[in-house]
Amino acid sequence: MNFPISIPETLPVEEFQALVYERAGLCYRDLPWRHSPDPYRVWVSEIMLQQTQVVRVIPKYANWLERFPDVLTLARAEPAEVLKFWSGLGYNRRALSLHHAARDIVSRFSGQLPCEEKELLTLPGIGKYTARAILAFAYDIPSVFLETNIRTAFLCRDGFGLRFST
Image: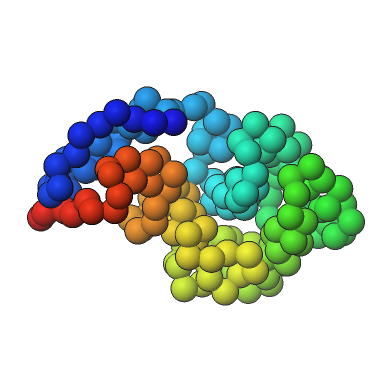
């Protein structure tokens, strides 16, 4: 999606935030994972959306949550069943990482997805982007990461020369 927009070379942070909200409003889609800040659901959606189109994720997300509604259920599942419900999303390693991470979460964090980046990064399949997305979307903890809407607003400037003033 291309946004015809003119951004001055120096942009106050508050104006950039307003721009992000404006552009996100133009692109907003009512997606099922946006209906709940539940950390497990946020985590599952973030992993499913890695390198997979939204239209493919929507039905798989619903089926996944029906079969694996929480971390404990996922942790107790057999790997073959996890892969069966992941089928069609590609990159099966993501499903196995979710499964291994669920077991870690149950054994190391009493079944609760951690709310600290350092701890999230110890889990299989969670890198900086995913950890920070979980913090922001599930725990409402301010985190620095370039989510798609932010990246769109940022990169719509010719090149990467956008600077912020404070």
